Amino acid sequence: MTGAPATPVREVRVPVAGRRSGRAPLTWAQRVQWNDTKWMEPHDHYFNATRRLAVPPGLELSDVAGLLAAVAARHESLRTRYPTDGDGSPYQEVSAADELVLSVHRTSGAGVEEAADWLQGRLRSRRFELSEEPPLRAAVLEHEGTPRYLLIVVSHVTMDFAGLELLTGELRELLGGRTTPSALPPVERQMLDQAEAEAAPAGLRRSEAALGHWEQVLRDAPVTVFDPPGPTQPPLDEPERFGQLGLVSPALTLATRAVAHRLGVSGTTVVMAAVNVVLCRLTGRDRVPLKLIASNRGLTELKNLVGIALGSCVTLVRTGERTFPEVVRETGRAALQAYRRSQCDPVALDGLRSRVSAERGVPRIGLPCGFNDLRPARPAPGDGEATADAVRALLPRTEVTWDGNRPRQEVTLWYWVEDVDGVDAHHALVDLWYLPRARTEELLHGVEDVIVSAAVAESP
Image (cartoon, rainbow, N blue to C red; front, side):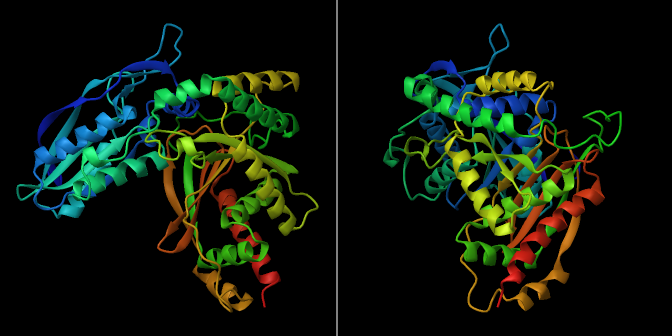
């Protein structure tokens, strides 16, 4: 590519020798993400996750390839394909002997960081053929003849955020020479082991308990959340159908911490409660089901799994005629119960949803809203830090941005929060047919107003 800040030089075939081959049904977490990934095709590269690791001076390309082979040998998730059987049902197949392709690129007339940014974006933008290729791709960026960065890209079907952090940490320790492959602790659980555990009696009981929670929500939730704004929906793949808006607010950041400290809950619970309140106002419903992502990493057997363990769960919180502190506390209780019921067979869940929908007289009970919080935990504000005047003084610094259009989504609203240089950034990924920009801005400002008002109301 002419003018590209990095150019391909060659490909290195990296043989991998693992200990075990095997075939099993997808785990519940794999199936959840496989379903989402298949639905997003051909835009499923949207789910790819990348990491960039510095290669210390003194390491050659062969050293990097060797360490990459070592981690792929340790973790079966990196040697897994996801074919389908004659009925179209997916399964996982692990190969003991495998091969990774390590692409080598060289900086070309640009700074190393610029070239690495560009290359990372290029690698992420190519989708995985999950039935045919390993769910891990890797590249090395060379500068002045030496490796400077190792870049990895993984499919979300095989790896969640926590699993990727574990993998990245392991690679970083190996690259830095702080450990060796032989000195790494043994891997206690692989994805094949997880599939076996889920099919065992204890796993089936766990799934049944989770399905009971889902059934109660499906029976109590409104059958639809958003009223259609017109008779004819635009196509899901219409380029301007979906988009994302963001709100960055120092005032909301401080107010969230203050309310969380005052009520003895997490900042996540405070934001989730505010989203519940504003969604009920916007939709005219007294409660709106809110889908959450559970990491499930609190379970001992999943804590160090280099794979995917996440689960989908749901809350349903009535907000009408309640004070905001009451909604916060109820949201906390509902979230705790949901997270405890986040592991279940997604195929069985789909059947349950179809059955309850038919009994309630609708084709499909709507679950169009989701929430995720990616912020790190923060300390409580200090004395005098979160006064009403301090919070109000920060309000003029609130900024709303249009983050651009997005590929088609299964949800009408995905509300998520991240930390940007110590300030909370709230994002609303929306179906613009139901939630056009003005209405989405109303949603974002509404969340800010609810939390700031709660902080200011009882502030000294």
